[in-house]
Image: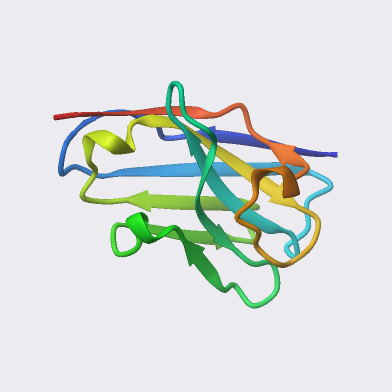
Length: 124
């Protein structure tokens, strides 16, 4: 089993920044792909960013490119999501997810482990 715990969410003004963290414990492996998803009220869960478990290759949804940066510290079993130039439409619950293969998938159902989520609210 893998346990994921997110932190770092909160209320921020439009144009501001937040850094989310996802701490992994249990049967973690540096080879696992790690991703961030988000879900706004009344909307489907959507892929935000992912980082592969082997090459460290990153992948982003187009609307996040240039504003969000995903990174991982394998020594700390932690994945980060740096979010800059935040917009009101970025308001959502952000979830960390892990899959036991190295490659990133943009489909939420490809991930077997999830955190409890952290709320990000951007005021306009």
